Image (cartoon, rainbow over all chains, first blue to last red; front, side):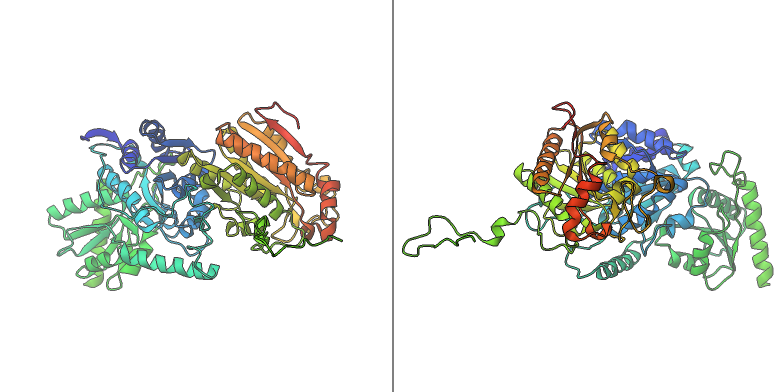
Length: 358
Length: 267
């Protein structure tokens, strides 16, 4: 494929098809709607199925059923719709269903929902948060690979800007290497064999003796994912930086730009931009903080990833320089998200860090 | 008293001997569940698995199972199982069937699961004419929680939260789900059977047979409701279960074929 000017939502839909996704179900809600429109247009052309589900509960159920049938399947919504899907997301982790779920969030209020979940039980899933369309194309395809590799749901956390900005991109397939065959998937062929397959959140492989043992096995899997999934993180200008700013998603893109501009003007600031939000890149952030005076976290909420950064950084103060910023649309278009405002906040945080350590 | 046959031993036997196993269904282990004495669900599941086996569909069949007492069959039936959340089996079955269009997909749900928690799922699946078969095991109570009112509980029925019987003034009226499904254009077959007598079990078997046959032919959404006994949840003796079903449930949830696209309507 060649580069062409595409809206983020369309590029994400195209990237899912490039990844081999052949089943999609969704319920319209801005800014997820345009992804659903894209899948409804693209999937029938490649022999896939896109269903206009009657609710988010049914959307995630349909995708769960399709994934259990061995086909790459996805659903999505915005944070509000993801709230409705939480029961399924939690149990789909226990059922080891390789499901990809998009959260085209409004604003950045859904960090806790994405990384901690609102569902019951002791589950985790991988969370990837791209900050531009090129990265989203790669990350969406990686989500399917990781879902299959770990047999676990993976969510991609986007936002309004990611869905609606246009960039020149190539949404063609990305190869992440071979995967094991889906010998666990259902197709009816093992029925009547005495060893009929099952995909169930209530049991592992039938060899476990109790539900408790199944949950213990699932706990071991969480530990294995935590250790085995290498978090993606971008760092810049951290050498000699007195202040390091941490941000993700579209605000992370603004921070990267503002920090680079300030650095070019001789201001000693750097940035860390986590792409993988679970497992969180604690080590990379701790390393970036080693020689700094302080860390600042910029998010468009009251401070959610802030908690994870404070868990990562024990050596220097961590301040919060973000805040809620919504215009009247309610879609998370942030009036605060501007180069001048951000430059001012970072400069003030640097001044404060210098004063405190003077 | 029945005379035991005398087996001659001076020549090879004319027919093979019968073992107890010869009388067990091929796709289920009837001794593996731990359901209460008098429960109708094992009978219904046996009729269903025998219909699958009889049609030669076994190696194409997948079950999407809900949450209730009957979840015990997820490990006692030799059919591929997709365990759904409470109420959500029709959407999982939809996704599974759409990616395995040559497979035979059925759901197994109770009245609490299908008619209370997930009512819109089964209605939308029927309206979309999904090529699946939804099976409702309807005993009018939440059996697993210990006998509480569901949306299908009949007027006057005593449950743990309708102690003096279901009263329309306080608890409303039962939903006749098969009647609703039959009124939806996407449904191809709707039958309501029961397991309170040998005759009804045989009739139920024919309903399962027809529903699965139509699914295999791609006719549309197929639906079989089974009235089953729950003496524990009804607070009656085991022996009274079949009679209670006949006297209280079947006059409201009337037994018969409500819709068959091949044969018009009416039983």
